[in-house]
Image (cartoon, rainbow, N blue to C red; front, top):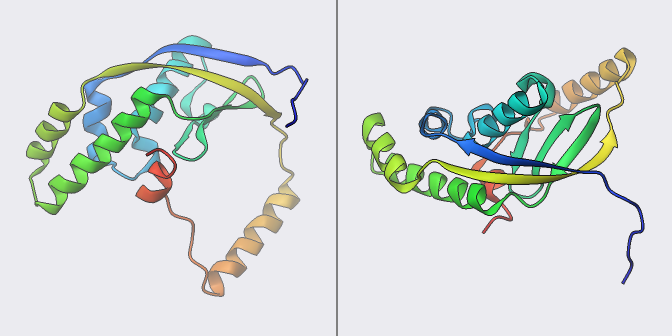
Length: 170
């Protein structure tokens, strides 16, 4: 067993509120990362507390990695996802999948989701990871050229899937 003696910087963001509007908007964008109810609420909390715009904070909610975001020139990670948010994501995906299989209308889907998930709050305790280092234009061109070669050879593009979203949460 090994112990780290390195001192970690920690930031606590309390009372991140997921509203009913965030929950309903997540229906239209189910499995679209930018409309995830937890991501939208967390990005709003960063904007309120630190003045960081959503496109600058680059919030990502993932079942395996937790919540990652940029703040003050560093990457931060909260792992695992807080319980309230984790259980709400799992319930949201379960209820919405069942409603879509039953071919429910959009209004019926909203009613079912809002009955299953009430607006909630959670607290995030994040640890500072590494400093954000800008990538040179030459390096970006090299990465993009390699990516284009991969796609041309038949590899599929990365996709945000339900499995990626909730893996490791159950």
